[in-house]
Length: 377
Ligand SMILES: *Cc1c(COP(=O)(O)O)cnc(C)c1O
Image 1: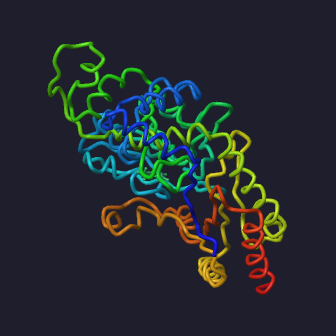
Image 2: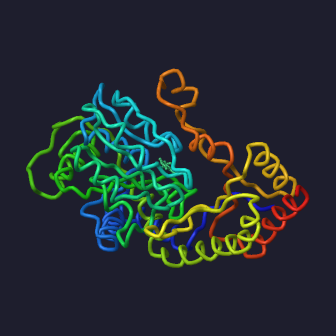
Image 3: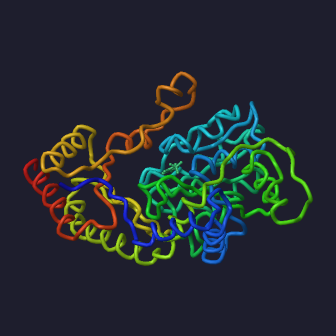
C-alpha cells in the first residue's frame, strides 16, 4: 500500500516537547516559539514573523490587518484552498475570482489589472505546489493601484522567485505547517510581515486584541483591551515540534526533491507523447518539491487513472474544485467562465509525495501509470 501522505518525524519532536512541558511554560510565545521566529527571520530575511495556529489563522490576521470591510474587493485565484478567500469573506469582502494561467494552476497575471476597481483592497496570489507566481508583475500592478499583496505561501516553504524567498515579497504572507505540507507541526502556521507598519497591530490582534506582548517585553506596566483580535498563537508544544522539523529542513527538502526528480524523469517520456502534462516551472521559480502532479487530458481519464492506481493500493488525489463553482459561492458568482481553473479542477492528479517515499515505491506508481497509458493507446 502506498498512501498519499505520511507525516515525517525527525526524531527530536518528542524530546523538545518534553523540554517545553518540563520548562513549566506551555502557553504561547515561549522559548521554542522564539527559536522558530529567529530561524525564519535569519534564514529568509523576513522582517517579522509570528507563529499562528494555522495558515488559515494567518490569513484571517492578514484580513484584519488590512482592515478589510464589507464592500471591499479581493482578487484571488478560484483554483485554491478555501482559506485563501474565506478569511476575507469573514470580514464581509467580495471575492473577485481570477482564472489560472493556461500552463499552471497559478493566477493568470495578465487577467489581474482589468479586474481592479476603486473597491479593490488586495491581491492574494497563491504559489501552487510552491512554484512562484510572477511576483514582479503582481507587485507592479499593486503598487501602481496602491493596493496590498498578501502571498498565500502555505505551500511555499524554502521556495524562491528570482532568488527571493517566497513570502518575502508581498506586504504580508501566510505559511502552513499542516501535516500535509513539507515542514509540519500537525496544525500550524505563520504570518510574515514585510511591511513593518503592521507589526505592532499584528501582535495585538494575535493576543485577543490586547497589548500583552508589549507588556511581557516590559514596554508597558499593564495590559488591556486595545483593538479587535482573537487567539491566533500556538502553544509551546506545537512550537517545540516545529523547531525539530526546522532543524532538519535541508535534509527534508533534499529527500523530497530527489523524489520529485525521480517522478519527473520517469514520467517525462510519457508526457512527451502527449498522454498528460507534467508541472511547469518557469525560469524565475525554484521547485520546493511540495507536490508532484500530472494533468490528464480529460476528466474521465483522470477518474480512471485514480481508480487504476487505487486498485494497486496507491492513493492519489485530485485537488481544489474551483471555488467560484463551490456550493457556498456559486450563487454569488457573476463573473466570467474560468476555463483554466476548471481544467485543473477536473484533470489534475497529485501523486503520493512524502519524506519516506522510496524510489522503489515511486517506480511502482510510475509502472501503473505507464501500463494505464500504454493499454489505452
Ligand atoms: C494548506 C493550505 C492552506 C491552509 O493551511 P492550514 O494551515 O491548514 O490552515 C491555505 N492555503 C493553501 C494554498 C494551502 O495549501
